[in-house]
Length: 203
Image (cartoon, rainbow, N blue to C red; front, side, top):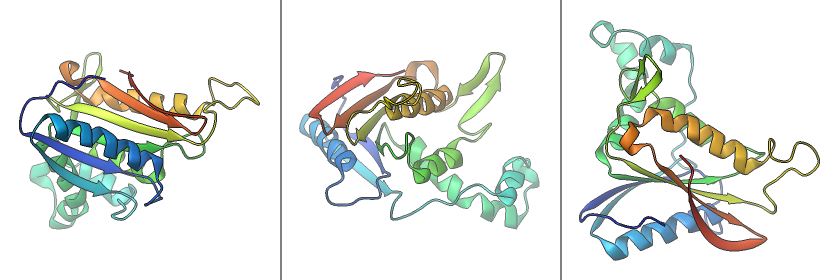
């Protein structure tokens, strides 16, 4: 695990597990943050998506997002207020730790909703000649994944339907919003059949 940190690390912790006590994804995040805290002075901002559930995108939000900032009405600014706050929170931190259990072969809906609200063209990324280019700089992202049992769907197309595979695919696509020097998402995962913490560079 890459554990070389500078002093005064600002950490944004995102929890998305529906479970509180007993959540393995939360326990993994606890362990990683505890490790960082043992090596450097830290400040942790905690956002629990299961408690403070983000709204899903709707037509009003999409319309406001695609309106030039100088031309937005007060109502449109209000529609984007939560998204603006989440983006500012993300921009302010050095390390992002995301607790991501696997639900039905994918990430929790609340985590997808959070990603939708922070993936903002001309704000957190822009479209370049070769596709999306990230505008968030100097970030390290750790995704702490937990799956119940064997993470492959053995009954058909095991690798394709693997919860782990789909989560990594979604997060790999999201990583395109990070600048090249920041585009390193590390994933830790826990399986009931083998409760050892693993950290793997996934992007």
